[in-house]
Length: 438
Image 1 (spheres, rainbow, N blue to C red):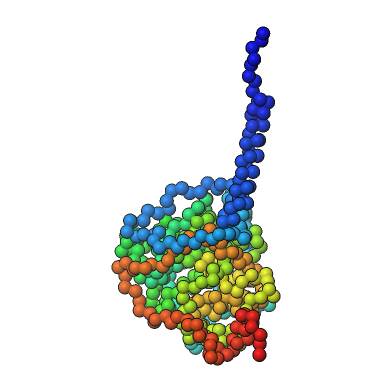
Image 2: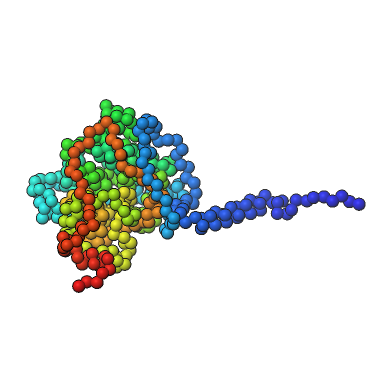
């Protein structure tokens, strides 16, 4: 009587078949996991060899990760899919090499309020111009002198591809290093942070830098000292200059990302530019606002601005404004392809902020709707914003620095437009609230 013997099932006799079945079940599991996980807004098709070593070693007392704000959303209606890092790197490199752009030069001009639509005094100023598609020039310039060193300006002009820009004035925030950078990103992306003397003193106090140095580097960031002598009294307005005139400060860059210093990027900027700007075929990308604001700003300035825009035809958002999906942006993160439309939009918006106040929610919709040619814009969901950046509160304590005195900010009250105080906006408010007109 023969002995019974155990044989290996045919399924396990082929290594290739085993690997195929394992791959099939793995991909099915991932697909089910993704479909049942709506909070996942960021998807990558492949790993991209991120930098593992810390970009900078901070002194223990600096606390670069203090005051983080937790933002957990229960859903994600428009997830972002990132392509392969190496493909994105090559595509952006090729795009920057093949891009050409005309940049007008400096001009001395005689300006006044009627000429610029703002509150400029009648004196000679250095200004730049951007051009509309009909060839007409639009003033776009530094309404205050933005004094930086010659070596910094040379370094800024050498940045010919992608630039990431931020700013800290009045020691208002901490320097935080970007995370998730690909292994070639620091070779292809410039990181510039503009700071004033007050911020430098705070960094020196914490031993992050030495003010005796000629140049300042903190991890990925090159710090650019801006002389406080000619700056605005309002630190927020000083930040508007590199925020919206980045194409002037970096005349040879092709793409830019503005990052408020209260944010920490956690996704590679090349992937962000590719997915949110290039793949969407837009001039710029910006997040929708999460429907809350820390402060409104000076109430009288706000009322004047609102009355002005209502009188000039500002309309609340309706479906008639599509493809623009919102009138209210969160401008803490702005991604741009430098070109005629985005440059013109940024210049016009800067002029409005200089004329009224640095809070850009009202001016954003007004300029966007009135501008010709129309700017192509990707206004992505708040959930996406919260997955590509970590938000922190501003410095709650200032270390070793004496802050400049500023006027007390007036807060908005519920009766902002009550009792006819903004009569020119009556129709705007009735349309926005859906109430019948008399």
